[in-house]
Image (cartoon, rainbow, N blue to C red; front, side, top):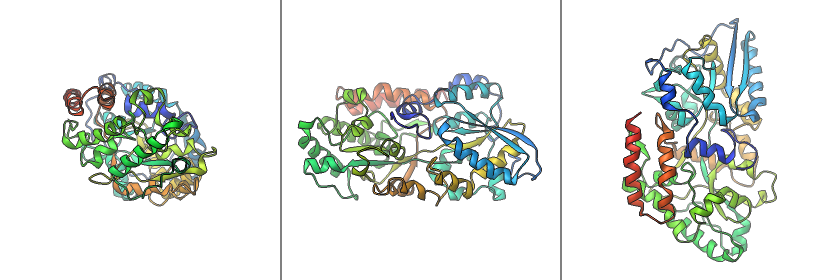
Length: 439
């Protein structure tokens, strides 16, 4: 997106960094600087320390837009712990994981810092993160208040390290004005893959003279083909092995090759030049499958009142990808107990409610997301919250970047129709397995 920076980084570049090319972190460089520490680490912290504890903490984040809400949280934390000073260190997302890599290699990580799914396992596996086990056992953190999919995303080898702070899911953003212009009735929200394909094809045919399309594919797995692979009953990676050569994964990819091949979507070349979200905001796309973060691209625009959100169409099952940032504590922090107390406070209902009320994020804590739906009251943003019930974690591994790059390099030849889906996915699975074996 070319609009206000969303919570996980900066616009379209953020999503590509997270998913297409993953993160700037180099697994080889980080591992070279890591000790052979057990992935379980030590867990002396319970999320509570003495009220007169004195400490100076560094809290590293990547989104300046969230700093006001973070400072409001810290003010509440300091009412309980007045002698713990928290310094917020903001590094732009483009440089965040490069900096974190250097700090991880030299054992100088911030006391508390943001972590995302694609990078989490690498740090957890090398003993760089403190588990939250003690805080959970003491009751300072209650994982049941968060989506299980998010808890699972930040769990490694049976141990949870990260506390989810926010989340996003995927839906279909619909331009009602284009439906009306095409004379196509809005579909039922209880729709299927076939309904989506048929509606997109009809819209594209009737809007052809305007240079507009019914829907769009794309190369962002989180918003497109990961979702359909899950909906086909498949997965992307399982037990350290690629699942791309399975029938379900191939069906999930074919959903998009069929859409593009039928002319219901711009070509993959067109989508490389102008991304699907840009097609939508320019009024040339009737249906855009995108994340909850996309609301920032619409609020305050002329088309805001014409937009409504639909749940993703159902395949063999209903599914969406869920992702979210978590707060993690450095295992090597010299003030680990104080950092874990801050981690627990930020995970509390009051802090999460404050985050949501200030419009910083969709908070991850159950029941604190009401403010999000009110930002576009006529669009039915509740769809994104309801999707948590059938959400599946963003596919990741220890070195997600390696096979994200393979996806970016190989899948376009399936989407442009130059090679059969089964041939492309077989090659992708083989190369992905080789990359996974090196982790």
